[in-house]
Image 1 (tube, rainbow, N blue to C red):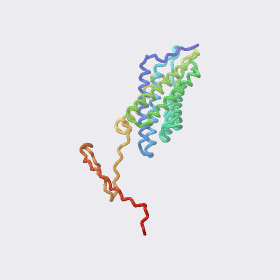
Image 2 (image 1 turned 90 degrees about the horizontal axis):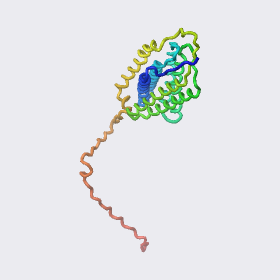
Image 3 (image 1 turned 180 degrees about the vertical axis):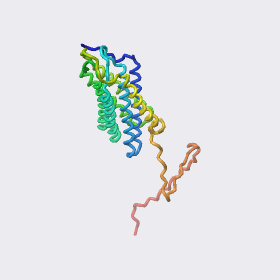
Length: 292
């Protein structure tokens, strides 16, 4: 028996909140990636790890907020807890691999393509692993073409977001990159959900697993608390907000007096005009041989 799938049982509330969570995680993670490009190599792994955890937590939270509005008529939905939290680990690890590639190899050419591809595959892996943790009295089936389209959307948008984050051009670029990252996660999620069809068995209700409402509390307490902590780090670090390098200090060497800076406040009209003097022409030597 074919089940009726409804992905918007709460209207536009869950898609909008899910998109905002994806943007928040993407903004914090991409700012950490930008910050890693401005510091010494010894500090870079820490910032990249923080960025990976922020993006992974954001997309995982977005996924299950979106799943709050997913219902199937005729059967309740339960979630396997170990499989659900395994999807969080996969998201952080896979996104971390992509971010580390971009953080150490740059945001151009093969490094950008590889990092964006791995990050997009991490987003898709998190989604479909979370879907595999669903327990219901039926069988989930997927349209192959739509699944491939969802993975392509995730990879393309993730690549664009990493490229924008690597430009290091200030706050507006970070906002744009986070919006693109949120689009990557949300677009991939709802495109993947459009590929789902359910064949109900009609035998009994699933006996194991937790409901989506039961998973909401740890989802909010854990990843959201981490996102708030990462947000505090971003707010109180000026370089994270502006994305600009600090001014280089003046180098002072012993024994070499520093040249004072000359500030021209009077303008070119007040400068004294030096008279132009012509050099006297050198006497030409006579080419006629002298009489000896």
